Length: 122
Length: 425
Image 1: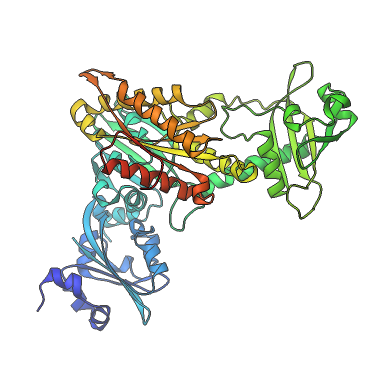
Image 2: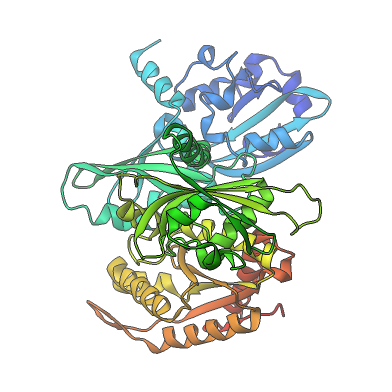
């Protein structure tokens, strides 16, 4: 079994897609999944704990216009629009519970999988 | 859902940026919308301090907040910040942010941030429309008309024009229109010269302007001026223009203070980013139509962080003010010296080629190094690195002009500082 840090860096889109919700919940990093229209349909327990918001209020809502506003710029949201194939790690600052929090984000998208992912490592 | 979670959701979803920070700028609370704008400005490393994150595009915020003496109150409402100097609005990037600053206590500040790029663009269009509508609504009593050729010579004038301006036909016909119509106040940033207005009319089909005009007896009157292209001749430069002049009561609001507030950097008195941006666009137009050269000098103070560390921010501020004083005193009359960011300045030189720009930059570089600056803790000497570029070198792209001058400046930084570079090594 890979350790958590390398899993954040190495886990593939296919791996994430193959997981059940409870498997994604057990990952040590946050997992946000959304469709091409940015409506979120995956929000794992780790991310929910970090943000303080329950998955019910995130799922089914356009992510970048609500809870994910801090990523709604050319550094994150624009990249999903511009790049069909995307696997990149970017240093970022999130506002979890309104405190600035340095994180690493991994942006994942692929032309043959409709769901795109943002992984959050605190 | 718990009340805490409702409150969190409320703040997560808020479509306006909210930031709380202490006197040093350290951010204690911030909502996602604020981070959306803050992070692209300074990157992750700068995003934990409000002043550091804003340093490159709104360095004045530190002194505005610092000079507010009361413990509570609104420091500044809707302060405009020009964040992107690119000519066209880039996807996913705001051009203008609005920032309000409030002091919550001796060491506590709050700022709001929102993207007002669309409003600013709309305002610009409205200002034109406003003149247009008032021209229609005010009713037409008397209006003068002149016809102007493509080389801006007056071909004919009607009797009303003669009555309005007190000039006979002989005094007008065959003369250049620039000698007849009053050139707008050079200090007014929103205004283009008479020649520029014709260039814009040739490009857009029409141009509207409102400002002081002068009669033959020297008397000033408020005039609405509409320039319309008459000919649809495909050959550029062959169009003729109709100019309609209306003598109307002046607008009541005197905009002098507002203009100073909107165009000057608070601390140094140099022009601000917004004015620089506006002038650059206007001068580019002139460059295109008249082929006058246009040069840019970018200037960055050397080891400025060390000065701030040693003499504190008041020392650093004294240095910035002294450099601006030196440059403003030396610059040619039609040049614009602007503070673009923390210790970064630009000198825009209309009508000057690269060689002349390089000479002016060298004089400035010498003058800065020669001028000791008095600060509370003693004399400070400072040097600057400068890079020059000319618009012709980059085929008229103002974005590339800034980049080229910047790249030369950074070459100077890497190779010893305190010098000017006007070529790419």
